[in-house]
Length: 291
Image (cartoon, rainbow, N blue to C red):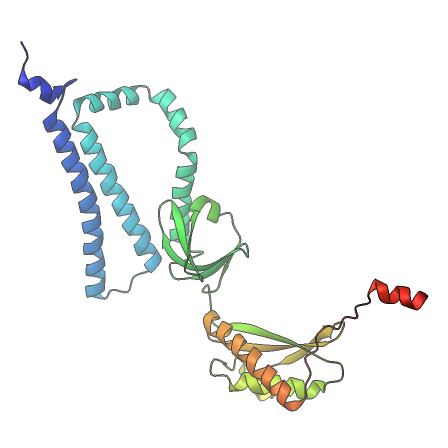
């Protein structure tokens, strides 16, 4: 005889088991997000000085643990999945090898993420350049990957294992102040000393410029902005000014501004910035000369 209860019992799995497991999964997701929000509010209200990188990584670890516990309970709540889990654990010898190969990269990313969080070659908020290809600000460091926000406001996601093997240029590691090279070529007919003086004057007037001389250098009356002759090009004498700024962003803005102001001063005071000349000879003209 047909029993209505059979509808709610398929293979020994009841609707109650399924509903309770779904509720557990939903509660797991809500709990993870809720706990992270509570932690954020607590840190903001307490105004505790905490390392941003460590805190960000800690939040991801807590979330991962909550998800692991929640999903484990949801699986254990269904008898058939519970039995399958026990069977899988019983064959752990073969399973361990399979999982080992399958999760080697994932485990490597987690270990690399832990090392990044501990030793901090990069931190959240740092301005970095990776292999001179990817440049931007570290936005987040998770268990698996690191998110870089580029200067074009794009996100580059790099697995931690790959990141740990790359050469990283970190502008925030150590002192923030940086030196900016302002390089300009002048014609051979131009007055070199006058051009060097203009470059020094414009650099020292810029609001982002800082005097980075030591006390000894100040006593010896060394220049605030040294300008050197780098060498000789095909049509120019190449000059370089060494200008200090408080941070990379200020240095970039200062460099752009100085390119403009120095060019305007050069134009005003008769310093020529050369450009290449080309003589084009048409084959028809050559034929006429030969004839």
